[in-house]
Length: 395
Image 1 (cartoon, rainbow, N blue to C red):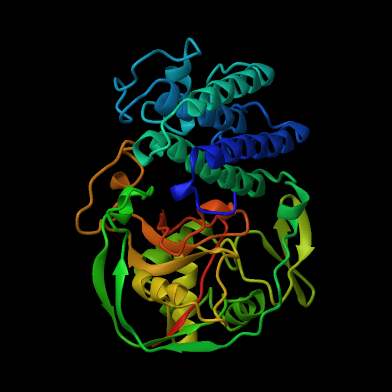
Image 2: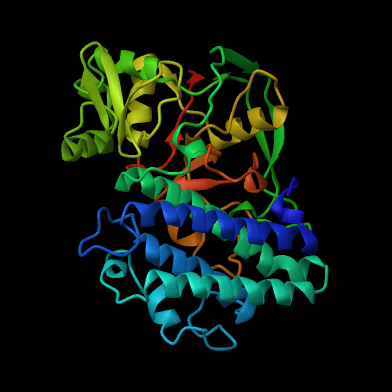
């Protein structure tokens, strides 16, 4: 698919859903090769689910909204039972917190792969008979983007669990772009999405005018070399660079550098998917929490962009602006737009308003069909296990 999933036709969805499932299984096989396809007794992190659970959950999600014709994520919304006797007990995230997923007596790997194949076969058969209109195609677009997002989560879990991913993900090609600043004149933009028939996320409801004053933004993300300067200047030791919440987080983490960074003489190294590498100076610094990004900004006499500034810059099409290597922190809390209402996947956004922070852009592990300058990602400020970096703006 060369176009966005948001307006994909039934034929495009057929190919994309098959492609997504093939890719998911390729990623899952990386865990199998590492011997981590089944749950351990104790979770590695409260944010990590067992890979086997994630695989079954992806198929269950498609079965729930497409084959079982659920109009929402309410436990009683499905019109028919799951293909698996205990499917809802195993894979409904609304009734199963992360910690409980590690102690489930799940089917074996082969059985869940069979379930994945059977669900997809039935989904594609039903899609072949569906009306080629937006209302009929909505659940297929939802299942596709959900699987694509969970695939990126699997890549992040590979970093946490020290699993080597597919070659193109282990060492993505990141051009050595020259760093600089871009001045934007500001103006009024439309944040959010219009009431069209294309797929939109509930947190994009709805388009509304936002005035953005003139601002100056980095053309690229902060690099490893720049962040190393912050560390060398005592960035982690100076409490004046850290917010109250940031200082509390820093004391809890006992951290003096980004997660997995290690000093090797005069060089900085980092663990990438279980292997220690020398950090390239020009590469965007990754696995950075919001607190670390904020501390760097205070040290550098800079600031993070607002999400409106970020979208203004991305929508400008400026040839020097590069985005899409890593998700990027903004200084904006995750809030609903005017006109917000939940969609069929009720828990996608609403539970996270005002506790999470907005990230914009995409990462090298984001599938091309879901990349959009309007996509609003969101995480807790302390999270650094994702593929996330940041850029700064002039004060």
